[in-house]
Length: 357
Image (cartoon, rainbow, N blue to C red; front, top):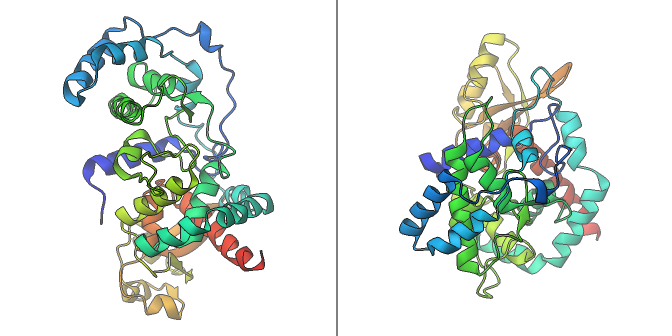
């Protein structure tokens, strides 16, 4: 199903925060910025906007106002976060091959097979329940955090407060989005009995093995092992179930391929017409062929809509695939065709490696 407007807006925001290939580091490699010691950064104690935020959240979410003020009083403005959220420099060519090589490589494949082996029970149950193959779930966690090796080292309360109350000028203001995520983070901590001052994650506020934003944790995460708590920080079962549930909620269809091979139209006008909707499936297989695209046999037999997905390769010719609604579902996790294709290619490599181990 298509995401609701608020969810779609949130996903677009996240995509803007995740660098595209050839412009900056991928999700699992954070840009290196010199940071000031946390103890020297100003706090939000007495900050008017923070006080107003606490009063509103206390009234609307039934949280203790003094507790909220205390959490914000200990949150610090982190200049590194303000720098990292800015767009990367313009003018750098995207390079799919270079981007792919960061993720589809021997160490990550070996770590993914080990993660799959450790959590095989939960991956099997997730596939049975939501139809998402194990390799796709493992691929997402591998691209996001290298199976927990790179989850971010910013205090989440600092990152979210900074982007809520001191969003930097120079790009479209996203402070409303981050105030919503700060609210969801505090609700999450109160519900789960977690100390907001101790939890760490990315500069944009994502957390845990699958790098969910707090709002996504509250909406889509599941207590898959039924131990009474949702823990994406260290519980592989909950991470597996939550990723599968998220993809299913955003339209994953059991048994459907993510894409088909395609040769793009020679005619530039036809090619441009197929590229207009970008990653949104909008054309039937017949319409692809009518526009001069050549699909393989499976693609020609596809009963549904397709998108012509272009992956630029720097100065070399672009790569193309015909994406299905399952390709689109992966992009709901991160609004990027490069990200989705990296997940899919890593998943394929994991599937090929799995029987031999």
